[in-house]
Image (tube, rainbow, N blue to C red):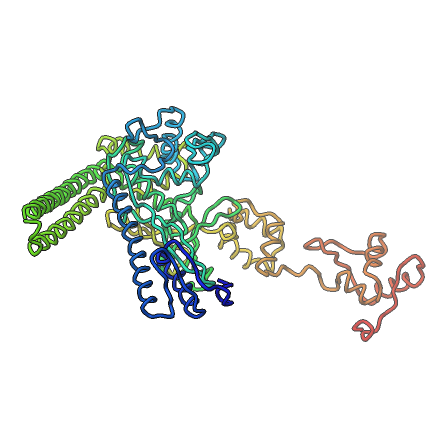
Length: 605
C-alpha cells in the first residue's frame, strides 16, 4: 500500500482479485488507490484498468458475486449445522459428567467419582440455596474438569470448585437431560476509538432456538432445573433480588416502608439486636412517617401470624385450593396439547398438498409452499405455548407431606437445629412481603402482611421502648422527689421513697446516689445546706483573700470550727469577730500560705 501510494507500482498480480470482494472495505480501498495511481490489477481472468469505468464495473460485479458466494456457503454450512442440531446429533464439547459412547450417543460419565461430584453439587445447592454455598460445601475437596485441546485433551483434570464453575454446572440444562442449541449468541460492538469487538451473551430460556427434552440421561429433572434457575435469579442482588441471609431478622429482604414505598434495610447493633430502617434516610428523602423499628417487634407478630395460619383447618383449605389449581392447570395443559395436535395436523396436511402438486407448476407450488411455511410457524407457536404451560406451575407437594409438616410446624419453627435462614425460607413460602404502615404515634406501630394467595392482614404493634427510655425514673417517684426535694434532705427522701415502695427504672430501691442523680438530671434543687451565719470554703477564702487550701488546712488542724452539712459540704460559722481572729492567726503564722489580693483588672488580663 505504501509503494502503491508513492506511485512505485505499475501492476498488482493476484490469483483472483475478485476474491478480495469478500471484504468489501479492503477491495474498495485497493481499487480507489489503484485508480488514482493508474495501477493495473491483473489475475488469471484478465487485466483491469480501474481508470476505465467498464473495468471498474466488471471488477465490482465479480467482487459482489464473490461476497454473495461466501454468504451462500456460510448459510449452507450453518443450515447443515442447524439441521443436525434439530436432530440432536450435532456433537459439541460435553460438560464434565458426560461422554460420548462408541455409537456417538451422549451418556453419563462411567467414572463414579465424577458422577458423585456432579450429584453432590446439586445436593449441596438444594441444602444451601446458593452457588457460594456449594463452593463452601466443596471446600478442601477436588472437582473434576474435562480438558479439551492441548496436551491434556480428553483427560480428566481435578482442581478446586470455584463460583464460576459451580454456576456453570447449575445453569447448564444438559444435566437435566435436555439438548440445547443456540444458548449463546455473538454480539458485535464498536468502541469509541473505532475498534470492533465481539462478545458472547447468554440468551433467555424462551429465546433458545432448539430445545430437545429427554435427549439423554440426566442428573436432575427438568422441573429441578427450572427451580434452580428461579432460585439463582432470586439470589442476584444486583438485579434487585433480596435472598434470605444468615441474620436473625426474619423479615430481612421482604419488609417495605409504607410511607415512601422503599425497601427497608436490616441493621444489627453491637448488642446483637436487629432493626429495620427505611433506606430513604440515606437518600435524604424520608417522609415524616418513615420509621425504624426493632426486628423483634415485627418478627414476633409475623411469626405468630404464620403459625396461626398453618393449622389443620387451613391446611385442608389449602389442599383443596391446590387441587382446584392443579385441575385448572391440567385443563390448560390439555387445551394447549389439543391446539398443538391440531397445528401438527394442519402442517402435515399442508406438506402433503405441497408434495402432491406438480413441481413444474410453480404458480401452484409457490402458493402451497407459502401455506406450508405458515402452518409450520403456527405449529412452532403452539408447541412453544404448550412448553410454557407445562413449565408455568411446578407440581404441588405431596398432601401427606404437607399434613405432617403442618402438624409439627411449631416444634420445627422453635427447634434449636432450625437456622435463621431456614426460618426465613419457611416464612417466604407463605408470606410475600411485609409493610410497615405509617403511624404518627411513635409508641405504636402497624404492619401489613401480604400472603402469596393475595390475602392481606393488618396487625397492630406496641413498640418496645429503647434501653434508655425503659430505665428512666418512674413518673410517680420523680413527682415525689420534685414535690419534697426543695425542703427534704436526700436521706429523708430515701426513707420516704422506701416507705412508698417506689424503685428506680432498673427496679432497685432508691439510695443516696440514686437520689443525687435524679436531682442532677432533672435540675431539682435541694434544701439550703447552710444555716444563717454560715459560709462555704470558697466564700471564706474570698473574704480573706487567701488560698482555699489554707482554709482547709486550718479546719483540719482545728483552728477554725466547721461542720458537715447536707451533701457532705463544709459549713463554716462566719462573722466579723471570727474573721478578725482568723485574720490575726494568718498574719502571725509564717507556715500558712497566704496570697496577696489580686486586682480585678489583673485577673481579667
